[in-house]
Image (cartoon, rainbow, N blue to C red; front, side):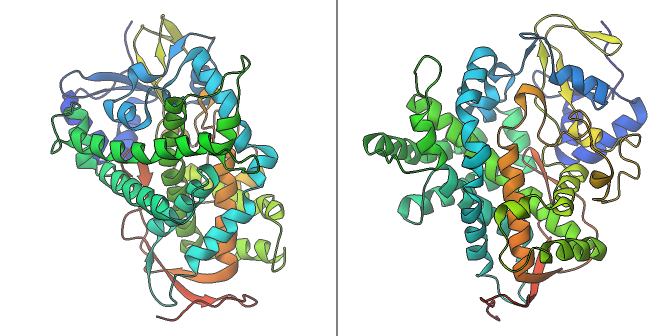
Length: 458
């Protein structure tokens, strides 16, 4: 079984290029070898990974026959296992994955999800109230403050207080540390915990501190349940599967950590990119403001979420620089044919989200930010895949889009912004994600007419 062609450079060098310049490396490799292509990444035990971007291949990878692929903890890095735990939805397979998904789905859909609209808008206003007219702020960090508050209050039911502040501090420190490409590489090369000064030892210490807070919160909630609470933790504590069994403390911890880490950093990055494009392209901003203004001064959250151009702007921001460049590997348990080639047991078959969103036959002029493309046609779930696909598609997709729309609308309705400078920006690796560079700053220039709460002038 011959694999598709790919770079012949040593696996450690390929790993360095993949970590340091991921989008350039993907694009150069695709131009030279076509789709699919094979990379060999690693130092001690290199991984042979085949990357796919065609809709036909993604359809096969996202919708296999049951039991064909292993996608869980056996293939996850040590960093993933330590951070999220073996019970995380990200790392489970088979019936356990289906059970956890059934328990987790209700809070993120329908009326439950929409009940968080007022909270999202209120927390956004609290953060923007701290901006000063004329004073630049870093786009991603400011969006992180909003998304972290949303996660802590909507998912955990945590509000201002010592535990809330401590979780914010620990989580910020852990995520900022894990965002470093150098540290990411060191953890891949040296995955063992070799003490408190080692890369993995530092991560383990941070996780242990966060775990202590999470388990304390879970224990206190079990001892004093509140039937009126609608945060996700309260709902999960009450959830039962078909056999009448609820989640154990360890299962709750792993799912909460997954939601906490994966749910706020990714949404914040997507919102920062959206604000960049909105203010980099004046025509996009003017059309979006006109659509928002058509709803009046105090629109309903559901009316905001239904706005077509706002939805198109969010989708295009997720298309052009998807937060996750790739989906989780699908590892066949028996030989499998994808398109016209058979792949052996143990192959790492990876849906390539970044390149799928740049296929010229699907997205003409794909390097251009053009929201109208999402108003002109509907893309299939194998062409537009910012949240992955199939049974492993991100369970928080609907919530993330809802939050993204409401935050953008709330900020744009309240304050006028401009980019600190008009240089074009390219994505940089931030841990496992594609993020705006650290020098992406926005400046509040004026409070929009009709707002009751003007921003302070620094």
